[in-house]
Length: 404
Ligand SMILES: Cc1ncc(COP(=O)(O)O)c(C=O)c1O
Image 1 (cartoon, helix red, strand yellow):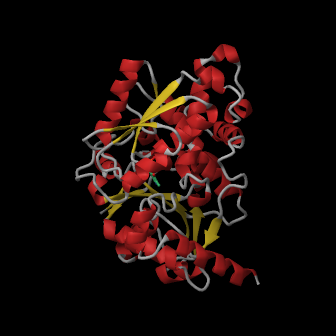
Image 2 (spheres, helix red, strand yellow):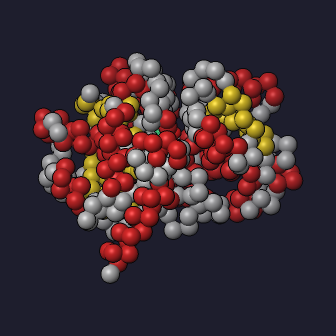
């Protein structure tokens, strides 16, 4: 369940990769995104969890709470909007659109017939729908059979037209591509495929915003970063930024996936972007992806030190653990796909040989990214045993008590 990647290097960040994802382009994306009113202006908090760090046997455990990124409830709000803005700028070069005006909806009339489409397991589609609504263009979202109706409603709220298909996530990606081809629409996908890389590259570049915020937070450098994997875009965006800034001193990266949707683990095993071996129906909906993004893989293969898988029940235990909080640990609302990193860390620390393989010990300073809040509130309440609102109330009480 842990694969030590023989291809991981500590070479300086290669120019070939910098041409695709770079810290300077990430900063530009971040600056442009600052014009989108749906994003929290001050970024997301990075919380230290000392009690959990001690229980797990590491020196420091910090978690970035992407639930607070926007009302959309996940880090995906950093990807689709910037990819959409860049796509529109490329599609209408003669208009010289500027990000601030686009995000303010100033060109809505000119964009009324421009239509974007994407497949989604929920969070990317929600972010794309909201961005399209803000900019004033049309949006069609293709949902596969496993996407819950509460996730569907959350997307439809932002005015997107919904298309339901019977197959799985990968079938919905193919269906979106077919509809786009037939209607002259633009696919804005968070995963790449043959001949389709620049938009998912823009999406990944947007995700690097969260890495930039982590590095700017006044913390000693992290020795380990755990990243959950769907198609690999989140991990690639974050890894690229750390790697470019820290070079050989970069942290150790560990990617964690559901056992049923292990496409990145399989890619590491086979040495090339590959498909999952399992059923791909994990309750970690955002991570239930069967096919690696080949573009993301170009960043992950040379930089991720360990790939591992976890089971759904370990994710549920991690959700409950974060929701509970502790005397020194703030209670947090972390959704199903948010907690794979914590579950992975707990699994490694329970097997000394695996922890040692990844260099994890009582001196380690570990970063986790809680990538979503309760984006499916009914499911969250069922899994955690209490509503997200109750956890948030406990969080508020904890903050009041700790401010004194
Ligand atoms: C909450 C959440 N976390 C993590 C991921 C994984 O991101 P990626 O598919 O880019 O690897 C997703 C993807 O949808 C997600 O929704």
